[in-house]
Every structure is written in C-alpha cells, then in structure tokens.
Length: 139
View 1: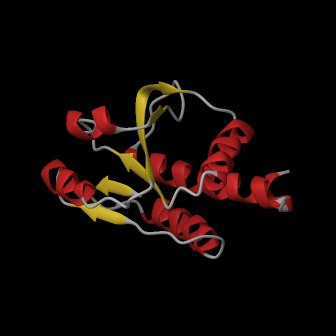
View 2: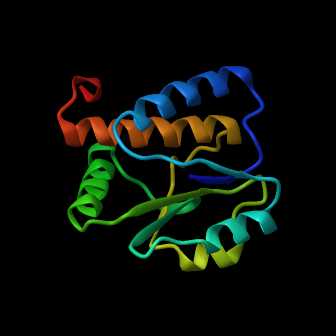
C-alpha cells in the first residue's frame, strides 16, 4: 500500500495497525509512506513483474465488500504477484500514477479524512481475505 504522509490520529493508527497486523498474518504486506507526491511517484516506479495497481479516487468504481473480495480472488487466481494500492493526499494522486492504474476504486460517495480512509482500505482488504478464506469475520 502506498500513500503520502503518516496517520496522525492515534485512534486511526491503532485501528489501522489492528487490521494491518491481521492482514499480514494472511498474506505478505508492505506499507510505503512517502513525504510527498514526488516521492510517491519514485516509489511506485519500482514495480514487480506481475502486478496490479488500484488507485482510490472519488470518481472510481463502487464495490460491495463481496465484489471487492471477488476482484482480489481473481487476482490471486491469475497469480498476480503484487497488488499495489495507492491513496493520495488532500490534493489526490499524481496523474502519472492514476493514468497507469489498472483499476480506480471509490470508498464511498462521501468524503472521509485521510487517516480514516486508510483504515477503511486496510479493513476492506482484510475483509476480502477473510471472505476468500471463509473466515467468520466477514459474516
């Protein structure tokens, strides 16, 4: 997961860490926090051979959790080595990252603080993995 800045709100940091720890026990995860959009673009240049990029943007596609899990499952079935997820700062993501994305996803028609959006992405990715694995969390 790539994003600019760090989570500032302690409550959001705690929730993010909870879901990230749970997710990390199910699959390999890496978090790349950069100081600015320029650093984000540089970090994004280092790409795995078989990767799939998702950007989160208000103009993206809306998914139910079960539909998002199906996207993740299909990527696993295609042996995608790396699911790259990008969240922008208050100005959004650089056009260079958005234009190269395989998919654009919206978390909601509503606007969320960046710290909370990061928690939501981690939780929804964890939820997708539990749906795929038939874990009772998703029920």
